[in-house]
Length: 191
Image (cartoon, rainbow, N blue to C red; front, side, top):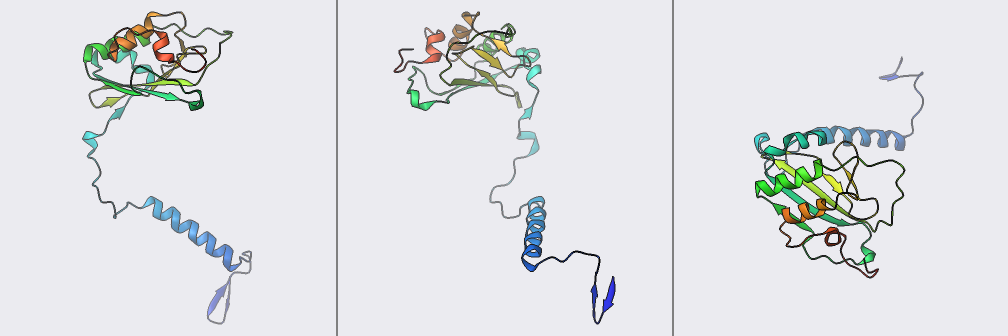
């Protein structure tokens, strides 16, 4: 540093153009603003006691007796296939016994074997969200076509050799005569 007139000059620092300096100042301002709590929020934050507490996916099977709610959401990753279904894309189950039956059906599925050659998967995925009071678990994903794999329970599990699985899930969400076809839907390909 060298004092030159009334200002300090740093000869060792590289020269920064005014535009680059403004960009750096803006980045610092945005970073600092992002860390500061917002005072302009119109809704108060939910108290910590009302927020769900997330648990690990591997603990779901250990907590089956405490499960009391299930939300099943269907996602069509390839909407151009135009599949139709006999039940809504989202179903919430609050009957404790039915929720626990669905969880037991998932936990009883075998591990997915290696080297399986899978048929076509048309992009239908079910997201099963389980709750035990305020505690929530990571979603379990189930694919009714292709390899019919289940993710979100630690190891990948397999539905293809467990035909009663779809019946258990269907009865849990209130369907009268569910089968694997019920969950695959029907569409222009005759599936």
